[in-house]
Length: 313
Length: 315
Image 1 (tube, chains in turn orange, blue):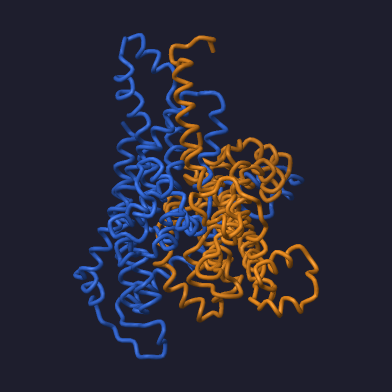
Image 2 (cartoon, one colour; image 1 turned 120 degrees about the horizontal axis):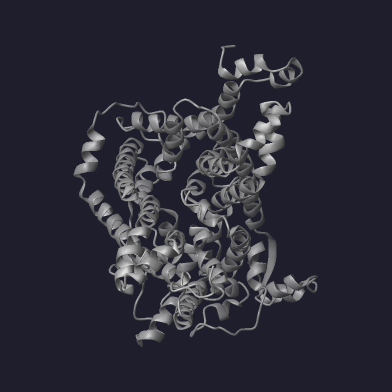
């Protein structure tokens, strides 16, 4: 490439474009920054007017997120032994005592179990199917691939009616297993399409060489193809994980207690007279930050993931 | 075992190699690998779909499973298609679809075009801009109700800062006229990066030499934009619109958390309306017919659109 090209934008153009994009980025990130900061505000600072940018950080939101509390009278508070920990102190300052842990921990754990369970299953099944679609003559290949994709077009609520009835009959309502199977079925279309793209890019010559060396098809698959596809499998897994992690419609309709994930739970965190915004923000922060980290790690494959492999860059 | 080409190859190879290859034939492996996926999709997608079709001809109510179920023919379909409220829901959905796609294409394409000026650090900013779209719509939507609070909300404060209006004088979520825009704003905030990323891929796929040739022909920048940039990006842009269209037709989580369909039912999009019929009023048969109508609509519109998209690609 030459050092000077007539298609290269001028430095003034670059400067203007850069300023506009950075301005957009700052505005668009404000709501996210607001979530992060509100989690560390006291309830009074959170609803101050004008909105507070500088404030004294407090962990009250996080304490409220993980505990349930009951109000006590001044005399009762006097009679109590001195607080054993910093978080008890925070709660006592509001004339309350800790009654027990909140459900947030359980709900978060449910999200982890269901997320990882369904991700493992969909990537496992997806890799097998994608390999077969990529390498073998499968009858009606295009129809099957389109069928797999079309399952993603149905509105979740439309499928939820019979799934609700089916789960009730099979005793899968509000169970981890039920949700794992359901999310696997939703994610598998993404897994197959993405992985097929990744495997298509691995030259067939590698396997053919292995076959000539005396490997069986199966050995060639897991000793040659799988290691080559590792990056693709990892990014597919992260996309599946993010989907299960964020999913709300099925979760709110099919779970209520033991298997409820965090998205339907976080909006129900309430304090005295309405939502306890610092606690909601704290819960949201813990829930959203892992996805932000994954997004940054995934940035090279992002486009592929969100378009089902249609755009590869 | 049938005599496939692979089997013939196996017979022709030396015995020492053949012993290792034998194992499973390619065809068996292919079926073994594809079958679990297809089976799972049949069980969790197709079987329920058939069940829904069957339920749509009945007056079944899921909250009274023991009551007798009567087949009512096409009555559910008839009632849905002649119901004025459902047409209002469809209008709300159309408003939401049109404006979200319009704004996202406009802003997304502009951003992609600006990022493609290749200023220093554009990769970093692209990654940061993309963040909102990867987050949980329900959790983020819930938090936006806080940003939209009159007086204390950051959004209202920002608007009053820019226009001088009193921040407690308007309610984005509570107001009948503003609520449909409140969901458009949040969806646009969330999904503009999606359109942007796809447009950026389109812009980067245009080879420099086309512009160089145009430059030699003394084509103006304006003309280059309309005769080279736009047509080359169009297939990408149409793909982005397809994805956003399907997703927003199904829209549920974000809007449920933001407005819950209110005030009244001005933001009650089809999925929310369907959820009310199915899981609050428990009119399972009626809701099933509704679900089928929606599915056929999405599928039909998407198929027509994909045909158009392929035509554009061929040009």
